[in-house]
Image: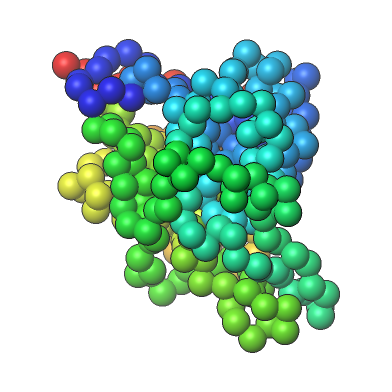
Length: 287
């Protein structure tokens, strides 16, 4: 994206998701390809098993990415980092320092590691220092796109979305300080791209609006992490979304079937469940 006013089209393509269109592969993970104003942004990388193949089928050259953003450090968003970087790159990588933290989930006394895989960690440590930006505050990528930085927790009904911890004993709940979202200004409002929204979907959308002088949210795309949400949380989330009034809601990845169905009942055709291969087009800011 250039720093001057541009016109044309912003395109957001889902590269990796739990569901996939014909001819593409699915995996438990998430990645988006965003094209706007002559620049390209790769947002997350999935687990790494399908990113490169799906991109090739869709005619997307990942080596052309100007920016690579990691929404947080879980394996299903960062695992594709190593195979991606082996392809060669000139991209700038943006992520919070805590993406490298050990982390896990604990369910029925069973501990599952969720941290960035070792190969991805090694690739991150080898990344050229001049191309690596540690994001600890709201950051502009250019005049029309930016990153939230760490997201303020304001709602009383949102949490991290599950039994997530920084230690295997379950003594240190994961605060997800590394959770961040990408926003792009389009002609009719903001396009918000989420990885898992561990900071809370509504918290995230409120922060994006604050960073853009209260600008209307046109579309929200990504994982909402409502898989384990109570009926009360889902009801309050839907009520808050109604007040925000996005024209397009695309739940993906970790949103959960019950939540997706609730969103479809509430928003009708405005809610379109995502899958790998889906592309959304928006008019960019005009002259």
